[in-house]
Image 1: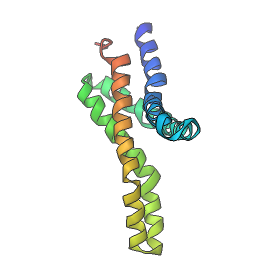
Image 2 (image 1 turned 60 degrees about the vertical axis):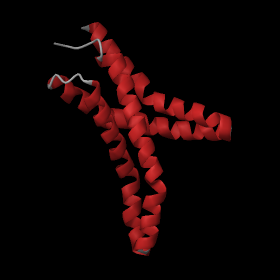
Image 3 (image 1 turned 180 degrees about the horizontal axis):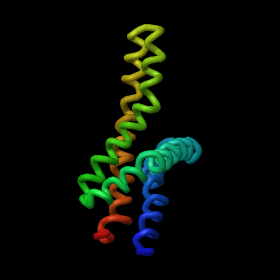
Image 4 (image 1 turned 30 degrees about the vertical axis):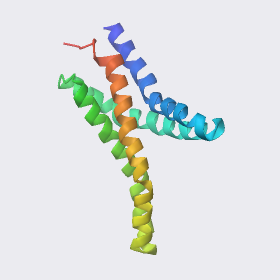
Length: 140
């Protein structure tokens, strides 16, 4: 049982940082180290916050229901990414409505790419977590 707990803790420590690492490696060649590092920091902070706030409860629900499939973790990881996108940018949309619908829609349109990053990052982090903590570690 201690091995299972250690793998779960390791999964929660490693998995949220992987999308930030991928983003850094993809950007360092094109925009430079400093700018790539800033984007990776922001993505890492959002990733670890989402893992704490949503990932841990989702893991315990899936564990309780004995759901161990990669597909379930991928879908819920993507939904976690969408939830954090909504949490960060939907309030901006509504606050910009006071200045007109055009500005609000423009803000929403310009941040949709960040929503896609949230979906992809959540899916990557959840699949890495599944691979570390769940794949060969099913608690029966």
